[in-house]
Amino acid sequence: MEDPVDERPPVGKLIDTALVPIHAAVSKPAQKAYLGTFLFAATSIALFCVSTIAYTLFYYNYVPHIGVERTIHLQFGDGNPYGIASLSSTLTSLQSYDVSLLLHLPRTPANLAAGNFMIDLSFLSPNVPTTSPADLMPSTFTNSNSSASVLTSSRRPAILTYASPIIDTASTLSGLPWYVMGWKKESEVLEVSMFEGVKFSKGWRNVPDRVIVVVEADEKMQFYDVVVKIVARFGGLRYILYNYRVLSYLFFTTTFFTVSLTTTLLAYLILSSYIPTPSATTKSEPNHPIKTEPSASDTEPFNPLSTSDLSDTSRTFPTLGRQMPLHFSSRHDGLKTEEEDRAHIKEEEEIERTTGIQPLVGEADDEDEEEDERDGVSFRDSGIGTSLEEGDRRAGQRRRKALFSGRTGRG
Image 1 (tube, rainbow, N blue to C red):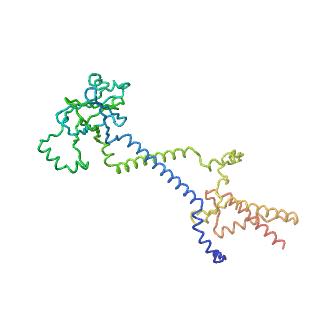
Image 2 (cartoon, helix red, strand yellow; image 1 turned 180 degrees about the horizontal axis):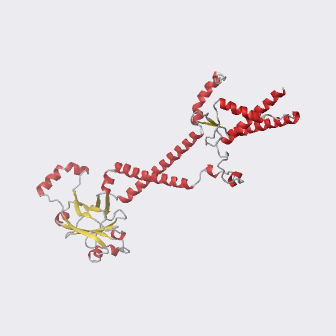
């Protein structure tokens, strides 16, 4: 069969061809793909932002400040000079710190005459009372034996750098222009190391929130300023996070993103297995069982000669010797032949009623037997279950022959 001829104009064909990609792009499967891609991309971006925020919070909570500096305002007039500075919450427990004290002193005759002097630095616990100025006096801490007030303390000596009169005079003359313009001053900065690798026990009560400095000297000394410098000594994971920030960010953010995305997908699969799809929730007609009546074959006993259970396909079976093969007709063929035989029998009875002539059944039977013997054909039961149908067919043939013979005799 020839294919139908497309009678559309060329412009219509061109337009349909151009619209094929558009139809594919706006089809239902494409829309589902767009929606799934959009949801996946939006979820991925949201989870990536959450991962970035989570890593940032983790970094600033786990990695403390690398360096803390506090200016100490010394108090004079009541014995040795002293000063207190607040540390707030800049220190962390179980973290090593190096603590040093920066002293900016002028090279006055009194400071040079003081020689060696002692510096006392103590870290105070948060529960130390400071309700009155007397509580800030150094005697409150130095004369107290309470371990709950002072977490740790250190005493270190310090001295200005010695210079002979000749060297001092020569250095002053050589730097005289800078001294005149104010680019250089007759002062010196001493850096005194007070702690190396100090740690504080776990718990907020063991983390200091203030530091006190006391200067002990025989002579009355002068100071420009005093600064406490605290530097964290990182180790382990904190060292990696601080010194390799970009790599740490990529690694931990990717790990957090992967875990969160996997968890989200698993949660989606679990929920989708419990929540039915829209097609399953649509209303449908209830499936009522169809009532069936028991058939006669279900109640009748088994009959080995019954042909009701045989196949409806006609078949031919071989026989032994020189016998003719047996042909099995289906039930439909048998029914058709039986109807034809009944019609012939009815016709014979009508002829007998109108003419009064008996059909020559006996002679026909003899003639049939003689013809069968001449032809060397004899019908026998092969045991296959077709003898009943074969006998019916032979009886019908004999009746037809007898009827034909009767008509010939009348003629």
